[in-house]
Image (cartoon, rainbow, N blue to C red):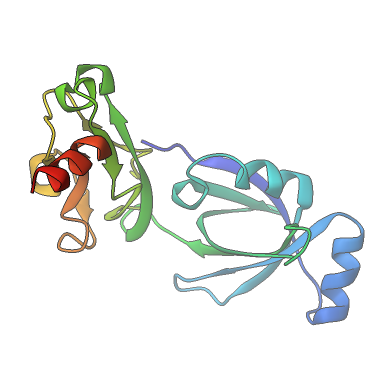
Amino acid sequence: MTQAVALKAEKREGTGTGVARALRRVGKVPGVVYGGESEPQSIVIDLKTVNGEINKAGFFSRVYTLEVGKENIQVIARDVQFHPVTDVALHIDFQRISKDSKINVSVPVEYINEDKCPGLKLGGMLNVIVHNLDVVCPANDIPTKVTVDLAGVNINQSIHLNTIELPKGVKAANAARDYTLVTVVAPSADKSEEKTSA
């Protein structure tokens, strides 16, 4: 499960395009913290710090402690706006969370034991349908990943959501949509031979 990562931030005075541009020129990223029982709060964070976190896996499912002056705020990243050409972060949104709140997050799915998958040994192809699973879970107990075991899966077999064990307190947000996680499909050569035989 994820642990809160500390991020230093400052209160942002003033809003608007001019203020945001001035901040970006000095290597800062404007942002906002919303949610909970408090009013939205404008903040600013160091660009290098933001880039370092964005480039890590699971950015949007990681709990952060924003250190704004003497105040510590538990948050989760909800949105990042990027420059269309340079891909530099232009603005970031955080949502306040509490230990009792449940949130909807996207968690990466890790597929293991490909070497123990009979279907792949026979030349089958792994068709991953769900790379990230949307889940509802306690805000202070977000899983870092969901693991799916491929051992024993044969050609033309699938692994479905209801056959894997999710961490305690975690539920799939869209169980019907994400029902089939992965399938081992027949090699394309076999399909060609089938068509020829037909």
